[in-house]
Length: 257
Image (cartoon, rainbow, N blue to C red; front, side, top):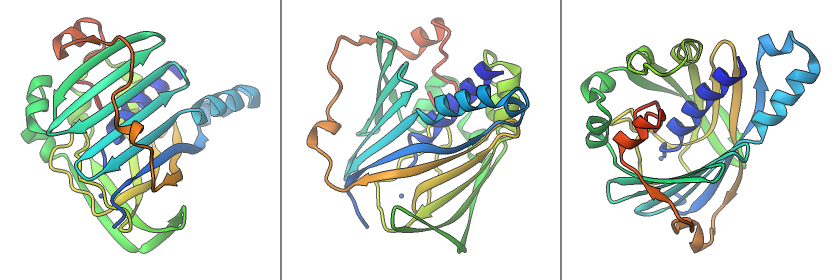
């Protein structure tokens, strides 16, 4: 159960890492601020508290400036990802407990074709609606509601290696975002949702997978990030292709990779 939840959550984090929308430079740190798992709660408060603590240790920071975006993802200190978006290419540096891998993937439809995904099918699977009367304030920025409606079965049906329970959680996922017009990023697509354009920058997500519900929220915003955050990480990274990743059982065509 926990393993499948983590698989689904990793998919979610990676899918969000490429989202972006009249501050044009900064670093937005995102973290899980609320987490609920009804089945886990029934197994005891200690186990639930441990799971909640583990999940809240996960973080994502999006560094951006005109023409450049870098996303850092930390999964419990065991998986670190550093994704650079530049000139139509996403370069991903992944460190999994010392195993370092580098992979370059074209963004947009070219990348989907490399993954063996049907871009036309994916284009018709989602929509975003906005309600400017429903507002929240996050880090002092006024945000309004954006409801993300989509049919995840069109993606999950192609993920043969994903556990059935994790598939079900992703297929049943409902997501509401609160976006601000005060922060402006270059628009990057969610990696497997080509042509999605967000009217604003999301600073809060409320995700409900039925068996798991969480709030993912901006907890810090630095308008003057150090230039080093836009540099590639140091270390000996093994360069791999999409096909090589598949052979390792990691299937980069999975949601978010």
